[in-house]
Image 1 (cartoon, rainbow, N blue to C red):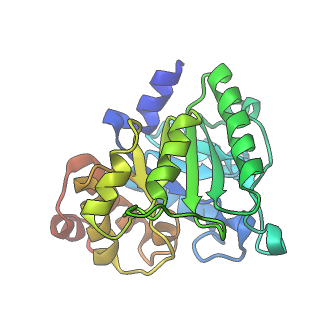
Image 2 (image 1 turned 120 degrees about the horizontal axis):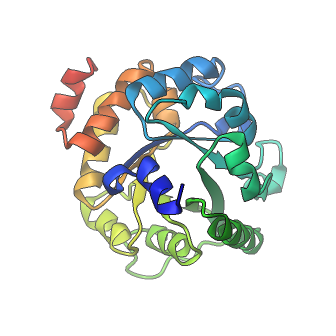
Image 3 (image 1 turned 90 degrees about the horizontal axis):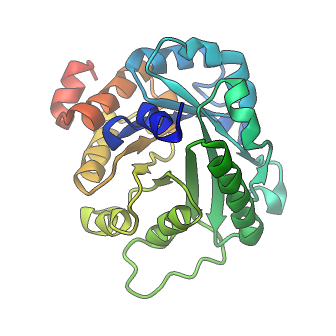
Length: 265
């Protein structure tokens, strides 16, 4: 299957509902990831396009996605909460040649710009992008503007997130994760910064369905191509319902109210 065909599976019509469940590497126990098989089944039932996970999860549970519309993406960046000053230094824990044999169809990598180890993380993403290019594998970038050395330019309403998205694009990512910047005006500056799909993150779990969906609706209306949202979904008391509501917003252009009604939220 060509790279373009793989991209159409995880980004049908250029839009995507992607759920990262890689958090068990950096933090554990995590609500929603303890009974991870049940969570994965709920996400598949909701019809999400992709689940982003570390390679062990993909190898062990990837068979659950067979004959469904849900696909696995392997996340190759890792660190733990126990790393002290290196806890934000995302190291590589695999390579692209593992992706297809383990049952995934895409690869993901993270950079924290402004962190002490930013140069090394950029170099790692560049290497994974090179491998993905030669293997014909879709490449996803998770780039966060969150380090102590972050230098925000005067007038940058996006607080560095337009730059983060631009870095992902220029390093060869086919799509990238970004964050909601607080307003449609500022978020539009992020989405206008690149020609690749940007998927909006969710942040820490709140369980507030209306708040989550309203933010997503605003992001979609401001140029987002979908969502890449972990804790707000797998940490939600109704995992399948909130995931299905996100599918309705992203792929069927539902209003917040109608999606909540349809999914009994």
